[in-house]
Length: 216
Image (cartoon, rainbow, N blue to C red; front, side):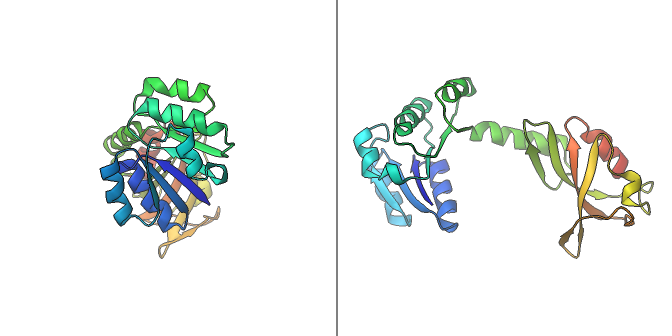
């Protein structure tokens, strides 16, 4: 898979390194020549110094062969313009970083496939740490209608019961448990043990209710 990343800042460089580790073929575009040269010396990828909003430069990256184009600069206007230009090359997947949430609608209206805001994502994760301090992991699904949480069962009223006695309900369903560190799909008649770690699909807005039932 061939991925073109525009922007060699912290977001773009971190993304490039992760994708390279996964075996992707990467080209990174950076407008700052000094920064671009520094990145080229340490990154196992082609680094092109120039303006990603320039059609000629985009063609130098073999944009027609790209599976993904990802604009990661901190400049929303540059990201938007580059994505608009890339559309004419029929790149299957176009992703843009947006710093100002007010600009998100403009990206969507011109047909950008995915619009990501690292700032909003980070704020959301921090909010989760505050409001769900006992949750090991959290994944949001769909439009935020549900979440998958990892919790540890410690409520004496639940311990010793069968999974089918407490799940599913209208608020949640226990979708996995762990035995010797391995994920196991719980069977209806399996008995719940103290300290058992489980993955739960929880309806949004019901976390406190579920936590109260399963934890102390």
